[in-house]
Image (cartoon, rainbow, N blue to C red):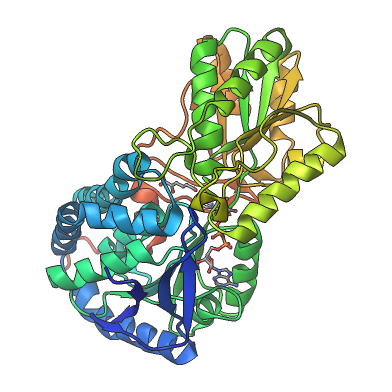
Length: 484
Ligand SMILES: NC(=O)c1ccc[n+]([C@@H]2O[C@H](COP(=O)([O-])OP(=O)(O)OC[C@H]3O[C@@H](n4cnc5c(N)ncnc54)[C@H](O)[C@@H]3O)[C@@H](O)[C@H]2O)c1
Ligand SMILES: O=C/C=C/C=C(\O)C(=O)O
């Protein structure tokens, strides 16, 4: 793709609106020039989606599923181009981008094609009454997504919303427009009917995102991002009572019991704390470790944090990536300073790496392991969204569960134990939408995905997505025996 990013409306590129720049997180240098959609451009995108709605919604689901498979095939054909676009915007390592971000994009289309095409209809027959349900699409759906897993999270919502018969307007993050812009080109190249998938670029509040969610022609909003933004969007759609599906922030706990395989717990926690620079909503930021293994676990995690490799994205052994922006790096660093002010012991990291090359202009921070803070410290309560965790010792299982649940958030939790009883008991007691046992971020796309408390509203995944992206109408018929 070119370095200039345009909107995609009604099946064609639209190069209109003021321009803004994105920056390469590896060097801080400008990388793309992007058009910002004002109200008039958003209006055209919504109108294009509305015009395409009757035709798209009337297609048999098998035909929409076939379109999803064509998109997945085309993603695989342009795989390396998508990998390059994602890396240019985020500074992710090529190894992660090739194994997680882009393959999940294709899988998101394929799996929802399968699930939608195989979904049985439901009917209930009781003596002389027959009730059944028909599902209709919501209409025009606004898809608003963040910068941390740009392609994965956009396609996670685009696939099911389209296969359910909606037409959509997508707004990627202002930091990461590239891979969804390639998806728009792909949609045009496979001949997806114009207006079914539209993309507008721009910022959030006071800009494209807000114009889109408030637009009277938008029937529902699906959003992934910060809890505070979710709350703002909810207020702005309250008057029209639009359905919302929100995947929001987390302050996820990891529980390490003394009976765990400690090697697996350490390596698993390296993944769960530092993957994607800690910039995954599911990342662990609070670790609770049984006191008898606390010192060993902490020393080993700190040692592993110090060995993560700040390479270039193109180096296959790179394991640490930069923060998305200078602003976000400064936010993460402010928590490193706050931790020190609050009295933390810094067991690894705590600062900014120095390279002596152009990466010194990038947005890197050191992977950081902290101990010694009270549960009410801000570092233990607020989502940082960086490569950092705080580790607290515990003495009993009940205490560990109580500490883990002491959060305003409830997205994901991880439990490390070799006891089957304990695994089930603890997993069932955690206030989280997702609990992983002896693993982290192992996904089955059919399962419900989402959070409790400040971490979200609703669940997506499998039939849960299809339920959100459609409305049931229940039809009840009184059957008169013996009559025509
Ligand atoms: N639960 C999940 O599945 C999940 C997944 C990824 C990220 N997240 C969360 O996302 C956050 C990081 O992403 P971010 O910084 O891009 O989030 P963000 O909330 O700042 O922005 C997300 C998107 O919303 C848009 N936006 C912002 N204000 C808006 C408004 N008033 N109206 C409409 N749109 C608006 C932005 O432009 C962007 O496209 C973290 O809190 C993280 O935990 C959650
Ligand atoms: O940053 C948050 C990650 C969310 C992941 C998913 O939505 C997914 O794997 O489907």
